[in-house]
Each structure stands twice: as C-alpha cells, then as structure tokens.
Image (cartoon, helix red, strand yellow):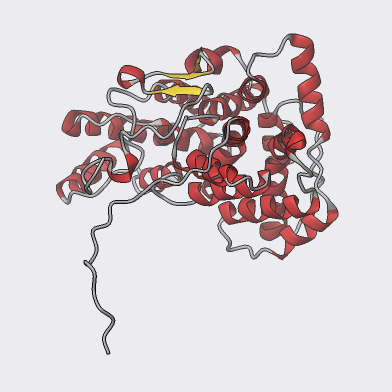
Length: 369
C-alpha cells in the first residue's frame, strides 16, 4: 500500500487474524466464534455470549449458572474507587467516568501477571455497570447506592441499579439482547486500540482504558446518542420528514445510518428495531418510534442508506428509561466482552503492532546557519 488513497484509515487493509468474530462477509452478516449474532440475540443471554467470547465455546447449563453467579459476586466496588467516583464532577461525560474507573481499578487490583487475565476480564464485565451507575446516582442526586444486586443478568443488574427497582422481564430481555448485539465487532477502532496496547505487553486495564478512550470519539461511539438528539428535535413523523429532507438538502450528516464494513445492511439493526417496536407498544406514546420509522424510510428512499445498530437503539433505550448520556457507556458495558477476548488473543501469539507510514513531507533540508 502507498499514498493517501491506498488504505486511508486502514480501510480494506488486513491488520491480523482472529478467531473471535467475522464481520461483513458478502456485505452483511456477523458471527461470534461461528455463531450468528441474530440467533444469539434470540436464544442466548449476554453472560453466555461473554463466556463464548472469553473461553471459546458456549457454556453448558451448569457452567453458565456458575459463571453468572461468579459475575454477580464481582459487582461490588472498592471503597477507594467509590471515593474517586464521588470526586468526578456531575458535568463529566459518563464515558470519561468509565475510563477513569477502569484505570483506577487497575491500580487497586493490578493484574499480577497474564495468568490472571481472565480474572481481570470478568471483574470488569461485572463492575463497569456498577461504576457507571454509582457515579450517576451520586453526581446527579447525591445518593450513595449499593452496587450489589440479586439479578443474575448484567441487563437486570444495570436496570435495577438505574431505577432502584427490579425490571420487568420485557425490559430486562430487551437490554440483554442489545448487550449481545454490541458485544463484539472484530477489528473496529476501539478493539484495535486495545490490541495495539496489549501488543506492547501492557497490563489488561491499560488496554481496556485505551479502548474506552477510543470509543469516546464520536466517529466510533456515540451514534446512538446523536440519533436520539436528532429524533427528539421533532414532535411528529410529519415534522421529522420535513426536517430531515431539509437536512439532506443542506448535505448534513444523519447519524445512525450506513456502516464502514456492511454494504447491504447491518444484520443487527432488524433485531434492535423489533425490540424498539415491542417496547414502544407498551409505552403510552409511540411517537418516537414512528418518527424513527419515517427517518429510516426517507434515508433509504433518498440515499439508499440503511440504519445501523445505533439508530434504533436510541428509541429502545429511551423506552427503557435510560438517560441519553448513558447510551454509549452501555456500549462499553457490552463490548468489554469483545475487548477482553481480543486482548487475550493478542497476548497468545503476540507481536508488537508497529505499522510503517508513507512519508510525504519535505525533502532533506540543511539546518540554517
């Protein structure tokens, strides 16, 4: 490869091999270790998927039960970490909270050596929702919450902490499906950042912190927040159609559409759209979902752009009562499973990741007298 046009942003350039996921085969499709993500979202749970990603195979029923109980036991936060979270200002972006919390946990519970990497992974899977929601309640309402719950699922735990009440089965299952859909996506920017960090033989928490910082950028994470910001502008489907047409005329970017890898459709989108519809039918007001449908139809008819996972995640999360600033952090609470699997895979057959660059600057110049 050479020149700015060849693999700009490393698009189309293979940066390694992986056994964890295959993305965009023939323009669509997503599989975790061979299993179709659509089937996993329908039949599995997030903890089963996290186990699959980390250990390479689906667990049997006894192993899954043990794994869920183990994660439940790992949700409490050290007192020092709670103190640090309390010092983070209320106007901080929640992604920065998770980045700081992950880094701080790494100083309190350092990975002694790589033989403890699965312990570090499972601790983060269990405790990232606790970090986020402990800070959320303290920063916004001055409440110190207990971060242990009796919920067996990560989704149930998250919603219980957020709303201080046991979630309905529908709400728990909807968020569970969302966590499965977000859990892994091959060499995306944040995963690649984690692997680059891990390739230096840095510690587990540093690699995850690098991933969180990368997901923080709006060109990677945050599209679901941007989609919600767009949908909330309009008070009716008719207003949405008019407003989005005007945005297209001004050549403004509509977030939540198209994808860097998928060419035909995002296979995850119909799944989250179905959940958004199920949730909307239980709401008193279905306007937000109807607005989303109008925007989807318009973008397809005018630009042949399909919605990605982030678009219908926005109305789904709103139906679950989740504040918009927590949308992208949910991405973290899910993708930690994929990140951890990639860190482990990178370490298993490691080489320092050090690409070259095509120099296009000035030629040799003498230093002026």
